Amino acid sequence: MPHVAIKMYPGHSDAEKQELADRITALIAETLGHGAQSVSVGIEDVSPSKWMNSVYAPEIQAKEKTLFKRPGYGPLA
Image (cartoon, rainbow, N blue to C red; front, side):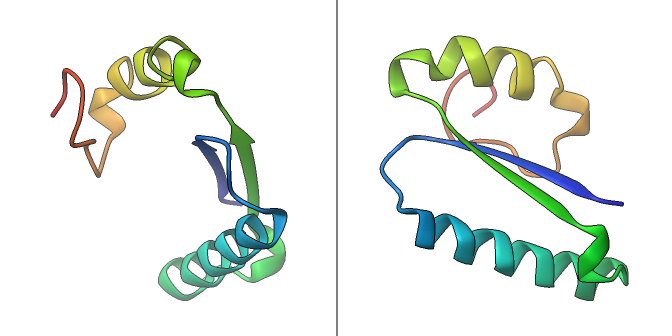
């Protein structure tokens, strides 16, 4: 039951978010062999002023060992 949590800067429409969720769902289903019904995708907007403290530090830097794609900015770049 894969769940994908996406946090990103605001400014994308609901249609763009839905397309992103649909594509991620299809890719997970294809890659892992799960049915689309077992995949969930959440998308949360985070303001740039809160990004480093709310997302980078706790979700990226603190979980460095679980990263399969490192960011090209900040301390882990």
